[in-house]
Length: 76
Image 1: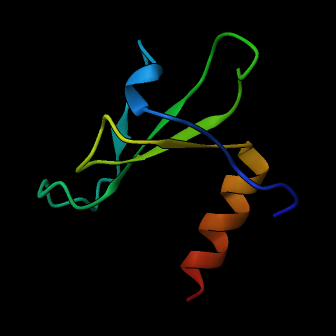
Image 2: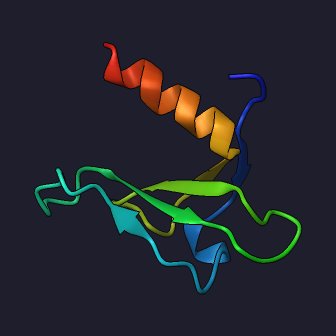
């Protein structure tokens, strides 16, 4: 990953996003949720937040950084 992720103070500071969970999620709220930003200066970034705390902070990743992260985790 070439750049550190940026963050926003609260996932609720990103109104109008469609948050998604993995199909592997059990629905027990112990996973992460992702949403693609489509408007504004952060368009194209991917927001990631804790499903247990949707009002908590969200990390913002470039598509390349997120792909690198998920590929690395997949090989653990």
